[in-house]
Image: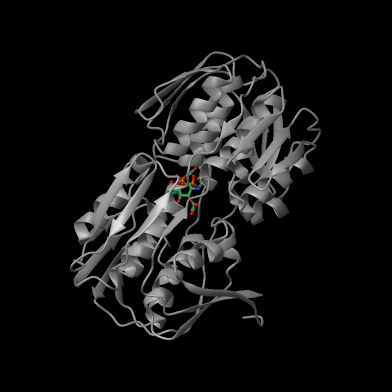
Length: 424
Ligand code: EPZ
């Protein structure tokens, strides 16, 4: 199994180009099911999760044609199977995003329950309840969600008790083809949701309120949509991760091809810690701090501090003076990186969903294990300032969501290699 070997690299420089957002690409790939024509997606991140979801669509009968490494054309008119099997879903839980569009277009589907993952139980009860509200007959048997709506889905008032990103995306896609108007109350407001709504509006759907507490969608009553070419928005979490690489080494680097507004919670926190942040229309430069102050974070839905940046800031906290406190509100088990950071010498104590990190610690390189996508990147950040050499194992987690990470890190001065290793 591959592993990464990273040598102490505490003086970074230059700039790195940010890829398209995985968490925008995934719902948009699912949304191609709603299209009557070929859909071209550009600025796709070349990462495992995106490749798996496209492959899943082709297993259902869709066709996809690579235009280049980061662009693909998808046609879903020949889908002849609406059963999303466990073997695919267990590899990529975001396959749940096929539920809404398959049900809306084909009026029946079977989607395997995704099951939990390292960071939590990850239930999909809110997705299922919403589809039921829209008129689907939906029940779970043998680990599969069995859904049918022979007369098509109907517009409905959906009130989410809890904000759910993919739950909101499933309802938006289902509502786009439903008969009548759907009002989603308490939707997610992430930039990825906004892009999905913008793409559907450009495809002819009457949709408004995205980014507010109420999204209104007037369904096409089964008429397929006419998609325009899609350019995936930049990945705000990848961008934040590279800013943390500059922060943890107290180096000045620039990230290009970003939408600064999408990173405000992250850049505001970096400024609070002591870094300078320079922003222009599509790039951000982090400037050295005189000293790094401890901080407090509570993860929250957008525009709050993103849970997907929690692990990266925990690594950074090991280099900040005093005690930093991180509270994880969204997932019940998203501290898997703590044990691994402690192996490198971090001083972290846990009490329920709150981590207290005492800095500043001198970290020492060691063998560590990635446990989930964002935890993997936190270990890379810690390895930059750990003395000696750090080997990060089980990096298949990393390949799910970070494109060309070795190449990008090498260009800003990181001594990193991907090696073939023994099974861990
Ligand atoms: C999306 O996951 C992202 N994934 C996650 O990114 C991200 O961490 C998460 O949103 C929160 O921002 C994609 O967009 C593909 P949720 P999602 O439904 O939609 C509970 C990454 O690193 N909930 O917003 O699965 C749930 O347990 C990944 O790229 C229910 O209770 O997250 C959690 O506590 C990791 N019932 C909270 O809501 C449901 O039916 C938020 O989950 C659905 C969710």
